[in-house]
Length: 184
Image (cartoon, rainbow, N blue to C red; front, top):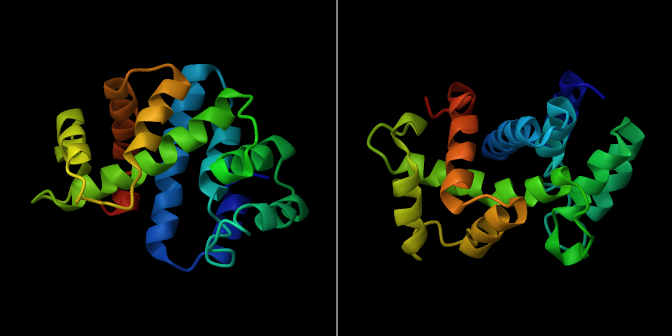
């Protein structure tokens, strides 16, 4: 499956533009970490792009992403990408064996948090988001309260990088696609 096919699949199942933007942000972060860990950016990008493709049809832990996996298989998504998508759901208790398996949950919550930080900036731009701003907002429990801070912290540890480095890596990746995210 190539990116165009993955994007068509995503758009087939996702109508909410904010969820599409989230998937694009996760894709960008995954591509960045693929380069860092010697992975295939296209393969890792597929995992990021498709990780929540079934959220609108399976919006609960009993179904997402488990019931989305057969759809991905039928569409020709590589099995290692499907496994990574399944492993990003903590409640499925799958071993995160590869760097790709570890990177997806590490970037998932962080991308959403960075978007939230950008949206409260006067410019509403990623260019005005830095590590200090993200860490300051992480301390404010009322800000973006649905985002689990421990997932962000644990994600950096899972990848063996400092929290500052993790945040910066994801900010940089998202800046590369800021116009697509509406955060230029």
